Amino acid sequence: MKLIVAMIQPHMLPDVKQALFDAKVYKMTVTNALGSGQQKGYTETYRGVIHSINLLKKVRIEIAVNEDFVEPTVEAIIKGARTGQIGDGKILVLDLGECVRIRTGERGGEAIG
Ligand SMILES: Nc1ncnc2c1ncn2[C@@H]1O[C@H](COP(=O)(O)OP(=O)(O)OP(=O)(O)O)[C@@H](O)[C@H]1O
Ligand SMILES: [Mg+2]
Image 1 (cartoon, helix red, strand yellow):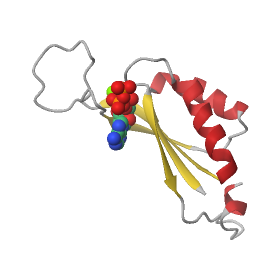
Image 2 (image 1 turned 180 degrees about the vertical axis):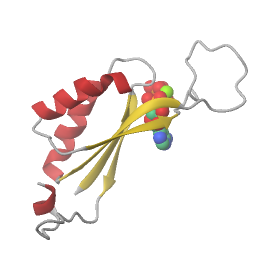
Image 3 (image 1 turned 135 degrees about the vertical axis):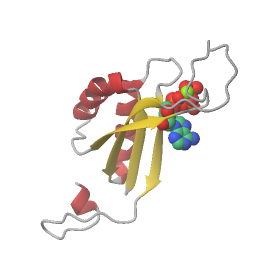
């Protein structure tokens, strides 16, 4: 099991949601976040002196998946979020130790799926 965490541009969320739906990925958690990447939160055309990072609004998406859904999920996020411009986002894939469906007590892959 993996936990896929993606930070994307907020205005790309509808496209990412649709791409995930098309890939049959329906379970997700979405949170508003603040973030900065390798441009320290500034655009590449910024000319001033940078003394501290600028935190930009981002959307964080978390999706727990079984192994066979890892690549389709990552591909769907890329499809929905990529513009080719800086700040398109980042996807982290983490090993996931356990998942429990509280209602039934199911664990692991049964609980995720
Ligand atoms: N190494 C990192 N650790 C934690 N969060 C990160 C990291 N890199 C990026 N992020 C998060 O992802 C968001 C989007 O990052 P962004 O797409 O700007 O990455 P980048 O490495 O600067 O690539 P690009 O040059 O394409 O902009 C950031 O605002 C931040 O929330
Ligand atoms: Mg960046």
